[in-house]
Image (cartoon, rainbow, N blue to C red; front, side):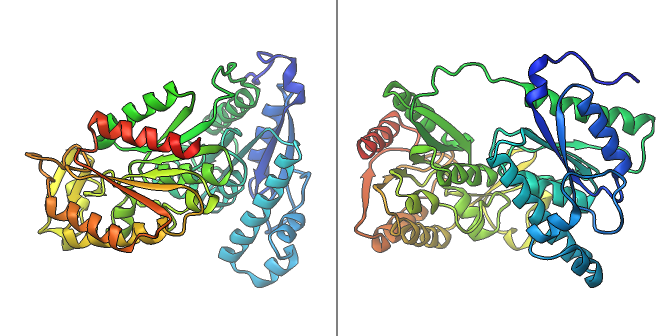
Length: 415
């Protein structure tokens, strides 16, 4: 089969792809990847993360260098014989070295391949570089739940179909496709961005808060800002807060704080225990609303834990089952949000829509519960610090006037 060749222009020569993986057990496969990439004029940097034997492909960075970067040594890992710890150390070391090389401008993309251990090591290294840097993981696990590997980064997972065990007529095509993909990605040039000089605002949205966020976004864009909207699905909230920590934003419009409900109750879309803290710690202006705190997310009905069998549910679609939060749960959410926001170092405002907090939490809708809404707002107000401004509006979260209040408050805090 023909190599991937000269369809790329001469700029390829200035690009470099980092190849991360176990060169002792997958050296043949990585050699094929390396040859395919270099046949286009793109150069490579090979990092060996294998500890079992001598590499079948000579690396640019040895396994011992990786182990040392992870806080150990190759000999110590071999003597210990603990596979789990070895994977952890080599993943940490690879991540450290990849981050250093990217910061020095020495790599433009990353590719890896492997089974469970190789996927863990490869994607940990990919997590260490910013969003926008091309990342491809060819994995035997890519047809299952990839969320532990992708997390909040733009990692492209490619299913290997067959095990990564030699070069055959099927793996040859798949690995060639992966090599072609990473070459194309590192050579891709984003079109000129007329918005590039506009300050950035992050907003959080769910389907049930879309009218609110859409209206607020339009108003903020009219005021000269570019708005990045994140879907509040757990990884969406994590991605937004990663961006906050990176120092890229002028402000945060955190309309949809629903991930806190999943974290508290045990739904599938938690963003982790630190959600709603990054903006405050960074001193960024933030305007917060209780969007979709009326619901906890599960998959199809048969995936809902038995302990919730007596609760109120709404079938959002065949694969998403929503469970109404109780007054006791929303009261606790009010206290949690008050505690987190009271630690904020920058201008912080909470705006409360008293008529409902999602498209299905309003009069004549299935999750309408004035009691639950009141429990949240009363506990938030009782525990919030003096550093936070609290505004109540006799409106529904998806009313235009509520969206306008969110946007004008954030603009006032930023300016």
